[in-house]
Image 1 (cartoon, rainbow, N blue to C red):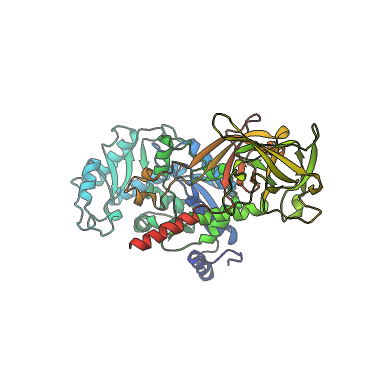
Image 2: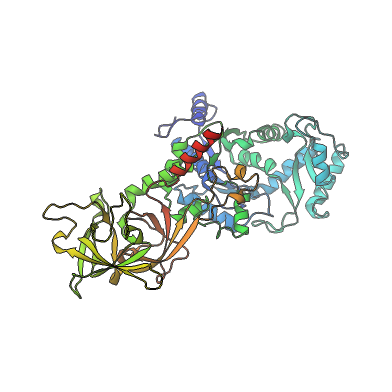
Length: 568
């Protein structure tokens, strides 16, 4: 029985009953991706579910690639999938399988159906097969080739394998029922000719099984006990069962469907994500704006945050849409505990402290985490010239703006109180280019001995020790909660033109230059940032924004909902 702390769900209830009744004495699941693209956050839900069940019931979970379509599959995708599953924290040990491992067995299964009179070679074109199939309200029609003899079907199928026919000349179809209410049972195609080299078998085969034929039978061959799929495969279950009923299989897995993950402001379709890559709308599958696991990893998401997110959304029987804010909350919650703090100035404004001694430098102690002493402290350099955030100064401050302004005193984080005494502007543009300030030496560490208070604390970086860096501010890729609906079928209409802002003149405290690639930290007051794992170089550090410190879209979402209610 399940003795883990994982939340209960209907699949766990089924497994508990199976084990209690003796239907199964152990649990075997599998994660069966098609290697035709990179995994996304929706796949993470399936990975966590299948590997989590195997772990909690002392069973095993196989990693199987359903590689039945050589036209769309690549070794790159296989490698990326394995990397993503490992990154999430799961291990399939020695149970790495491919549907292509079973091509000969699947072929013999197809021959068995032919010899039993339950499969036939159809010579109709693909368009004609679709036309003969019928609709949801009209029965299909039998193909004129449906009554070919067993001998003719077997001969044609053998010649298909031998490569005698061009692509599309024939297909092998299961002979089930062209009047079945379930369209998947209307003589589905189970083999087609594809004279394309396969990423594993090369040119050994020129006929390939369809996914629907290979998928359930591969589960059976491996001895999977619980075949867990998303709801879009619910109608296919009857077809999988038909194959199991009509073939001499040793194991009969049972399929259970759960709701797939749908996220607001996101597209979770490998076909559509591939379009974004191919049309150079994003920089690749690992673009930090992409919902792929490689994109999230590059953006600075952690495996723990994603696993916690999957636990939060749970496992249900009906499709629903999860607010992207919940995923963003999960990474903020995780990084709040684990991310060390640093100071980084993204839009720098130069500050000269007039009464600070020329040539003097000192180091100040800064906390690496505000609440966890285990992170310790670090030393940050301080000098006469600093950089502060441009937004932390207003020459004519509005009401409730408590940061730096002419004549106003603020606290520099971990350092001193400073007061702005002069503003230097570009004579041509009028832009503020420098602030002249004074400091109070008695406030070292950020406290005034006379007890006076200031209303604002701002971060800074010492100019002589700052490292120059590029910072990429990533935001949601789409502006609409449901991009396809809002775009009337073309999700690209809703692309967010502000999904990426690149800042090239950022100033960071020197310790950030020592971070390893892929390390995520908090820039105090600015958000969480990850040192890029691809474009970063020693002389060109690049940081990607993982998440803001709070949800900037919450107000927008509330306004949209209010507008919807007002017009409904």
